[in-house]
Image 1: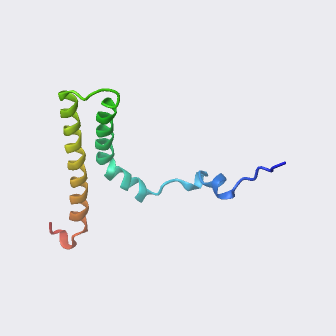
Image 2: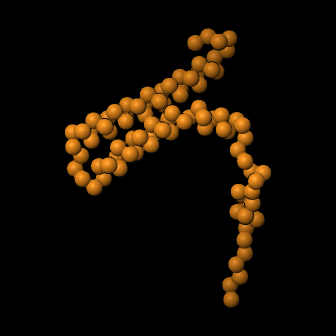
Length: 89
């Protein structure tokens, strides 16, 4: 007979004291435009999984890809600007 044994880390990994810190929540908030743009891009790809993409599907995918890239650039530019000393950009 095999005994089922729980691993203590796995049991306590989602305990109440393991909430995200304010810094982690702020990082998620800063990255939210990128996350939403990526979701939009995935939606555009999912629509075309079971059919041949139409011209409208291709435009939607290109537009979503541009938005995702723009969101990433904006995030990186914001982080670079915030890390410069003296407020110089």
